[in-house]
Length: 173
Image 1 (tube, rainbow, N blue to C red):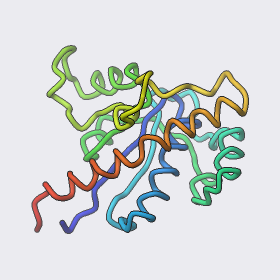
Image 2 (image 1 turned 30 degrees about the vertical axis):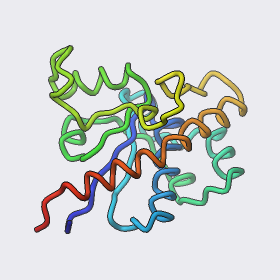
Image 3 (image 1 turned 45 degrees about the vertical axis):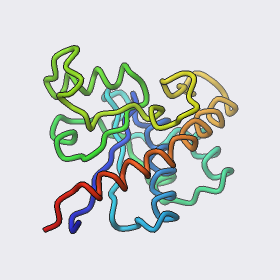
Image 4 (image 1 turned 180 degrees about the vertical axis):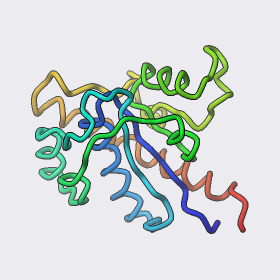
């Protein structure tokens, strides 16, 4: 495969969950030897936080966990657009509410789950997930951000396996 695979993580405001997932995934892709082969970014379903940096509590938890990606300090929130969704091979939504919002943006009719198979829940890649939505740390404290990070980290092996599968199935040029 010659072209980069494109992956996007999505939450509400793009200042907590989705940028945390973006950083974790990007660093793990490097560890998996896929650096430069997969592009990862993040967005939010709302415009409330457009231009804002990653939440300071998220930055603190990420750095304390050993993440060094420049996205931690350089992130600026942006709102997802329909064009973004069409340009991505895999879209990882934090909650089922986000999946529904993304489907609406794509014009997918309720119940037509096959219309956008590339839009998936992040936690669907965690085989041990009890709750399928990624916990929202926004109204909590640092321990909620630690929990959110743990939930994200539990999904990464499954996401990387999915990326490998997408890469294997992609036609070569």
